[in-house]
Image (cartoon, rainbow, N blue to C red):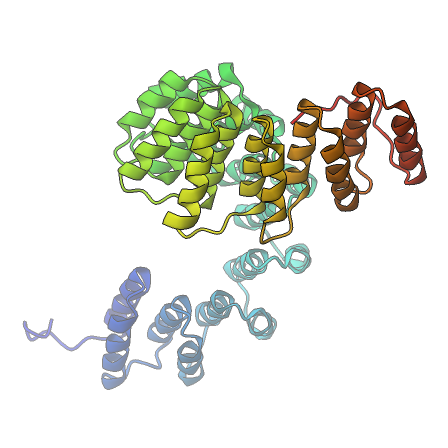
Length: 451
């Protein structure tokens, strides 16, 4: 424009340029354009000012956003909303709520933005109060609240709101289905998907990813095959990382390791999550050696395992009884990758040592832990004591569990079984008396799986 001698930029030009910076979060360029807008006398214009507030708010430069707002000759609902959203992005809920209350005009988008901000920061009660006060609501209002309830695990409230929504779109269906999946209610997620399917609503890739997660949780082989076939025969891009990763994970968890491996090898880029999905699949279905080989391949390909990855491989070693591999990875985690073992990592190692008969080493490992061991580690060792008939150590371990979980019946039952197998019926009787004194009761019909 300047080179071709066109008339200098006006407020619409600056507004468009600033919006471009806002979309790209190009703060440096935005400040340069801001300076030019001051030179051309357009800074105080409502369009330019609102765009600047939006840019600075998104970049968390809230003081600059406020300065622009206060310097505007005229403000409208756009500039007020942009500043309010800026405060929400900055995490200042009080300032955002104050601005919302003082706002002279609220359009629907303003209400939705405030509710979304409150939900984002976990202020669900405040969000619901605002939602109930809204003069009108739309699909965005409902979906925001459904998603908020799902995030805190209140799926009953989420479902009630979903049922109130007269015009459901893919976003609202997705919010409810993914909410059930995230809260471990995979059967309910599948039921909702069935409702959606019956209404001839075609699922998008996000709903299909949630459905795959539900299949992974349930290990539902037949449904997994249907989902795999549906995705392969419809217009879903298997090259998209989150779709490919979910498909690999579903097939691995459901036991179709051949299909999972085929999809895994076809992935344009294999990341830590996809490797862990395959390793966990091998582990679950009794292929410990393949799990170990794949973990080593992952390291050789340059990926850096995190604490979750080490939990996956240590669990695989534990299930397969691969003691030497387990110790190798435990040492690698500490000395090569400088990761501090969590109680879960220690529990895996204790279980691994215990099942291989190295009860003393397992006990010493627990005692050497820099953090307080949880019941998983002690429970693993108690199970190992039962397996190898070590009554003396079992008594000591059980005392620790009685302290950690005084009202849990499982440790009492395991110790009682150990006494019974050793024909120490007096101790069995004393233990039952202790359970009665402490109000600990075994649930009728409950079986206790040995660790």
